[in-house]
Image (cartoon, rainbow, N blue to C red; front, side):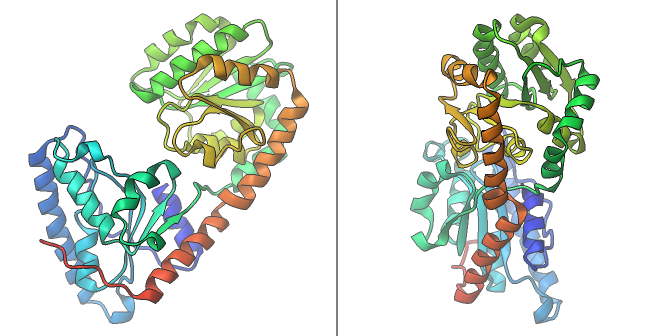
Length: 367
């Protein structure tokens, strides 16, 4: 998503410079590490400001833009730079968890809140985050919504030659072209991804009396556990392993249904890729999934940890090609109108230009 944001901003006519490569992520909640990262961030901010001051006024950065701000990965650089240069500070996809206050990530939590409170614009990609961040945004008018997006060109092109893709993918993985193909694309790692795979296996087990095959794309440290969770589905499951991004559009377009329980999913880029390829989605209604999947129009939404509900939503669609086709067309239309790169470029351009026009200066920040 960070790369997509840069591409969208460039497409809107803005010049984008990657300002820093500091990884402020603290996985384990170590206050000492957070303090060290904050100090490093301060030094990098000072270097960046000095570099900007050596440029002519017209060549200096006019906006600082930070992506994905939260207690485990606060921004120790951007607010300082924005104050020193007198430029707007903008954040995309922030989240605040009140339970982290005063805990192992206390310093990161405070840093994330301090950054949010100084932001000229806060861009939400996940509506589920907004209740947590809204109290810390300086004014309601500074909170903006941007729907998850992608460059849909390759996915749209794959959808146009679905029949050809289906032949190739069927031959490659040994799938029967006469029966519906269910697709899941996800990393195999412990935690929420594995929980989603478990729910998927439990949901598909009662449907063994129907005709379908499951193609799983992905790999990772929980591969053995995932295979065990799906073992009761027998020969219905085909494993593609991890595949390069360039191969995914053809696979999405060739399938009949994308199914994913989406346990604790933020919004799910794979769900958006599926829709961009004209693939209906049956998914758990976690986080911002509902901003991608229009329930009963482009797919079906169910509670994310409810295998019975997932099975009930999936069962009629397996036998109803006409409804799948209608959902496919609706998904293609929705992505083109709301989630494609040009739409994101227009939205971001409006947010940046508004922030620049107001000319708000960030409040001082303690070094």
